[in-house]
Length: 196
Image (cartoon, rainbow, N blue to C red; front, side, top):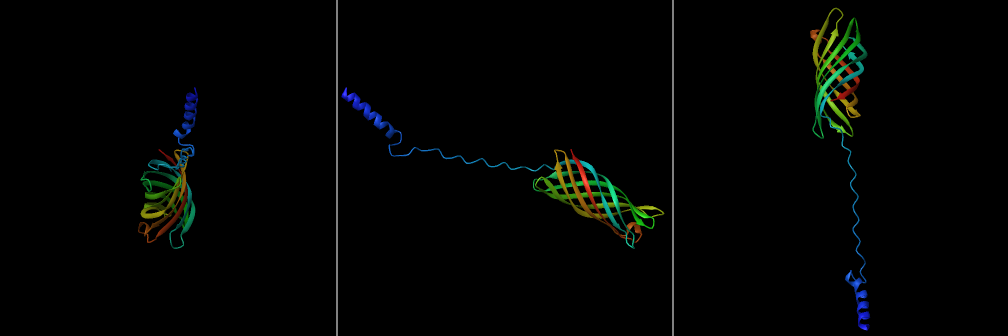
């Protein structure tokens, strides 16, 4: 009986030693690293879009013929989103009634654009340029001529398919319709586009 009690006491004393020793601290699991915060992805700018614009034009036709006023129209285009760079093509048309004095006035502007820009946060900051064709009322007749333009713009998503933004463009028409007059026009427009 003494032997059984002694054996039981030895087993009770040996159990902690078998589990890691009497003087060794218990091993605690390593703390888990916190999960990385999710990175907000910007919108995918690829695809067709169309919309309208409204703004202001300031025109200088030389020889003291200047004028400014409202203009507005429609636009449509396609963008390609390459991740860190967005490129696109667009056509837009603005109707105008800007009096240049002497019975002359700017009637409209048609543009064919190339665009390239960078996503900035959720928005898109871009440069644009291309060919522009203006219609001018010369008082006794109307004429059209082609020049070039360049400028900058910004687009910002509002919801999943709608964007708002703006553009500032500088237009140059050299020797407009062989009249000997160079026409310069600066336009600033607010734009709303629906993305398909």
